[in-house]
Length: 236
Image (cartoon, rainbow, N blue to C red):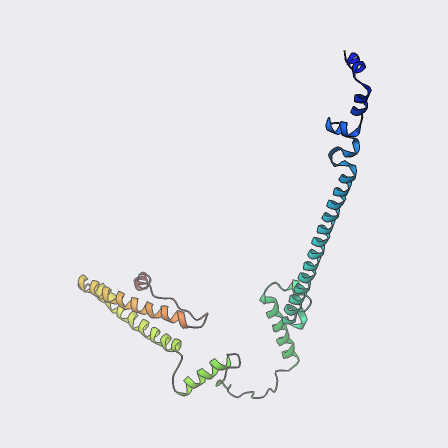
């Protein structure tokens, strides 16, 4: 039947159907025009590859630059820390694990100096030390302490320390008297009254201890008093 139709169609229609325009209209596209064509695909792929290459190159260059800056900074920090060490330990920072290693180097220097006699015939040997100045203290703080000393005064924490120690000694004497009176068979009510008074004094002392620990230099703090512990000392 298709053959009969082909025979009946004029020759002009067959020529029309074989033309490129007709093929496009009917959905028959030539190879060069399908989906953008090979030439367009090659151009897009080459542009995307070039852009990705440029991005990768910029990222690698920036990372290298950052790594270079980081290495330079770490080298400067290592050099500064190395200069802080004694000459015997410079260049060996990995071997220094604690301050004990540095203290050992200082002690070795002292022993070597003693063996070589460098501590003999020193200026001021056999004479009392001059304690009016402290070369290890802050100059402003040292000046303040000297002014207080000349005027017969002391820093607040020194005066508070003396006051706390005096009050503690007096409080313990009073507690011992009350405990001895109780052990001698005196009235239990008097012991309770004395305990209330002594506990109140203990709280006042602990408040002063708290104040002292806030203003004193680090390492000079003291512990407060505990009622149970003080009574247990008397029972022993």
